[in-house]
Length: 605
Ligand code: F6R
View 1 (tube, rainbow, N blue to C red):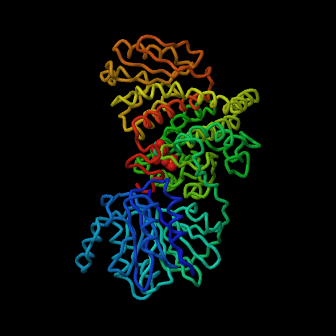
View 2 (view 1 turned 45 degrees about the horizontal axis):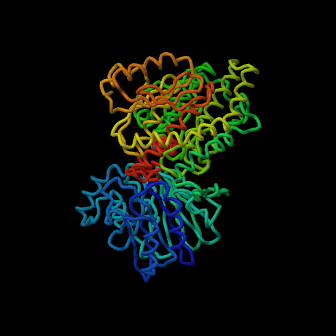
View 3 (view 1 turned 90 degrees about the vertical axis):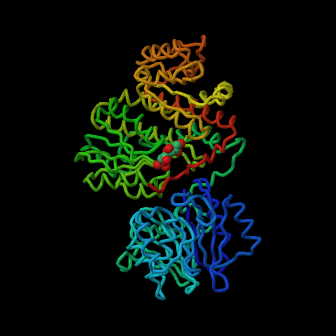
């Protein structure tokens, strides 16, 4: 989703800005641009193609400067078009880049139009540019401060103005923004990753704060103009895992990284202890009597999968909420509820909003399960567990999902121990299941050639139904989500027992029905559901555990998985769904790593 890089230095910073944009590219965008001050005026280049092309145009134009702002845009207000790409100018005097959504932009636009401002884009960003211009009276930071008090919604902005050529001002509310310090060079970015080439020293801005950067130094103030003192942090950035190696796409690479990523996630000195989650005492979770799991998309499916673990292992009631719904719902807070926001990026606006909503209701115990240690969600929560997936570049989440599941399993067992429901023997069993997980995942990945054959058939279909039961129902949902988002085939996930209550009407000889079939307590029920499909001549494709006693028959194709893996079985069963979606998308020739209309980190509502 949208990304910001900006800075002020003695040297030409355009290469820094472009490298920053390149590092944010994986998040998804549909246009990009850069502006600098040169010869007393703002100059910009905007492109509807990739950062690579922007770079070429910038070189051709000889665009250089020591004060600049740059952006990758994921369209919200106004189509992806050059005039809507950022930086946006006001009267050729103010230049701005913006992440977020301004909810009252129409009212502001009306006021500004009456005041004589002309709009050349359909963006909400342009109202901020004109507002700052309107308030400008020789002090850019003050104009920004006054302008943002009129905004409703979420924003992170970086601004420069023609009259003060050695100054860049940033502000944030609800969207992340960080200052990067490299000696006398100062930068702003929506993610520290964008600046990892130039610095490891960062100062994180809080909501409502304004950062004033100039060649003389930086200062932060709050929305009342009062100075804020905030220390910096040194961050060792995760290595840029940008090389594809033998893989065709990052998604494929990330699917194959899962055996290592899950092992990194659970390999801890004290695997089932509250201190693993950032708590200072092993008994910190003692009062917890309920779990509230929050997430979107794939992270929501992690929550759904883990709900069963909290209930069966820790004997603790668990509630799962889609973040975007929960944040606007009237709910009854529980005093001792542990609120667990789950997120790869830790910046997803809906999950962050849901977490803050829970806190506003009085929930005190919050624990983020997240892949990014520096993210807003981690900073907003009392405790955190950082999954060790490594940077996930493919928009479709894969290794983030399986590492989240490992983290949630560790939490369920930790709570189970604390509540006296997991004895030493059970703990040893869980530990050995975790230890064997990598090898089991490797053996599932070895089924890739068989899955490719199925993908060639699936690629010719328009629709698909995914079925699972019990703890594998969320895996069916995840399989359907993966397929639709990267292959653009319409897919639905259902609990298999629900089929006869409606979706069975869709089953014909051309409808592929893809089933996850672990050899668990629901297998016989699932087999009956499979028969219901075959009786209607539906085409069944089953990923069945080796000991599930399912084999190829008329209208029934089976790929054998390893033997039933017990409680952690959902982690194994999602892998073939990821591979099936991936190879189906490849066969259809879609842009697998950057599917249309989607962004990696959804920082707007
Ligand atoms: C699907 C996918 C999305 C994300 C969702 C939440 O493959 O990637 O559904 O899971 O946008 O993102 P995070 O986990 O970053 O909060």
